Length: 192
Image (cartoon, rainbow, N blue to C red):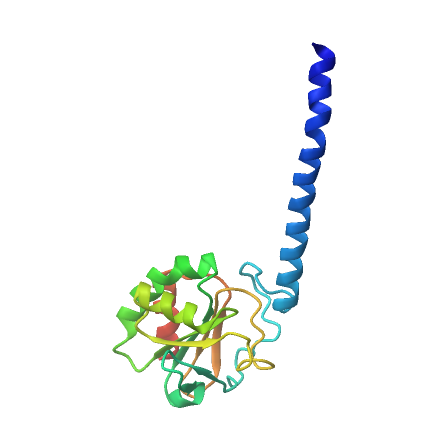
């Protein structure tokens, strides 16, 4: 009996080895796909590394991305207004988790002169707009799937990234973590 169970274990071992090898290859392929698609440092959790973003006290660089109707919308279209600029993706769990807080904050500040512009990155535009409609994002939602619009201007490395810009176009605050409604309202009010 003992030799039989040992013999069965050795017969199962090659199948287990093949399964583990297939898993390892899948992980390597997925890692390669992510590595070739995203910029170094992308998908990091929130933190305080703002390298590559406009500095607090500097002018926010202009860019133009597409809305759900395919029109180009520029940051400069909101010149003279405070702007809460959010970089996100529907694929990003922390971004999805903060949507209810963003909606609550927007409901509170939408009657002010401030604009909330959420720019989806690293996903097909149709996915971003579908998700935005599904969850009721009733503020400006733009898409920059390949980062063409922000390249060289906003090096977004953490998701979500929030940038608060005053009416003069000057960056006043940056947050690289999901925000509660209260924090978002407070930050938005400081630029209004």
